[in-house]
Length: 369
Image 1 (cartoon, rainbow, N blue to C red):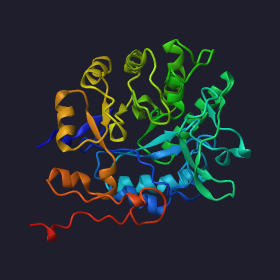
Image 2 (image 1 turned 120 degrees about the vertical axis):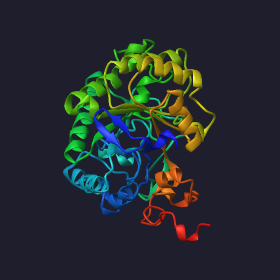
Image 3 (image 1 turned 60 degrees about the vertical axis):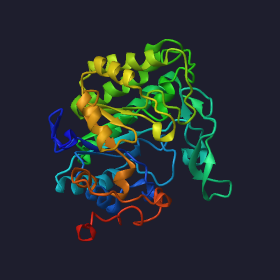
C-alpha cells in the first residue's frame, strides 16, 4: 500500500491520509461570499487528509478576480463557517488560503478605482485579471499599473493578513495557508528581478526581500499559533511575469533556513511544471529538506506513483493534488483502490453553477468489470 494513505500528525492535527486537496480558484462566490454550494463542493472532497481552500482575499485591495471569496467581512466569515461545518461533519480537515494578489488586479476591482499595489510600480507583462471592461461588463482584462506600497503601508497589509487569519479561526478552520506563490503580492517582494525598492523591504539584500513574508508569517503565527499557520511558495516559478534573477537559488534556500526555526504547520512548495518545464529539481528539494525539517507539502502534477516516491525519498511528507479533485470528489478512494479517474471538463473550471462543480459523481462500481 502506498504511504500516501498513511495517517499523519500535522502539528497535533491528525490527518487520516497524506493526500492534500490543493487550493484551486473556482470563481463561484457571488458577492465574495462562500455559500451552501461551496459547502457541498468541499464536503464532497472531505476524504482528503487535508483540504486547502481556493485563495480567499484578505481585503478588497487583495482581490484580482471576480467571484472569488474573501475572508474580511462578517458575511464572508459566516459563509465559510458553513464550509468548515460541512467538512468537519465528514471527518475532514480544512485550512483556508489567505490571498493578496498585489499587482495582478485591475482598477475596476479596487475601492474608488484606485491602482492595485505591489512592491514597485511595474505592471505584470502579459498578465490578466477577471474584472470589468470599459462598458462595465465582466471580462478578462489586462492588469492595471500598480503603485508601490509605502514602507508604512506594509504594516497595514500585515495587519490585514492577521485579521483574515483570526476571521478564519472564528469561521472554524483548522488553520490558514498564506499565499506566497504564483507571482502574487508576497512573491512580488521576494523576487529580486522585480523588487528594486530602496527601503528595508527590497533591493539586492536577500534579508530585505524576505522581510515582508517573514513579518507576515510571524504576525499570523503570533495571532493564531504557528501550528495553525502554513505557507505556500513556488520557487523558480515564472507565472505572472516572475523573472529569473541573480541569487535566486540562494534567496529560496535562505528563506528555508529562516522558516525552519518558526515551527509552522507546513511549507507548501508548488512546482509549476503543469504550466511549463519542471521548476523544482531533485537537488533543490533535497537542499530544502536539509534546511527545513518541518512538514513539506509538494504540489505539481503528481500521480500516485510519483507522490509515493517523494514521500518515500523523504523530501515530502504530504502530496497535494489539484485538478484530479475537481472531477473526482472521491479521489482518495479511487487512488487507494486503483479505480479509473473521471476526466475533467475544463470549460467549467471558473464561474457558473453546479455544473462542473458539485455534479461530478463518485465512482460507480456497478459499471466496473
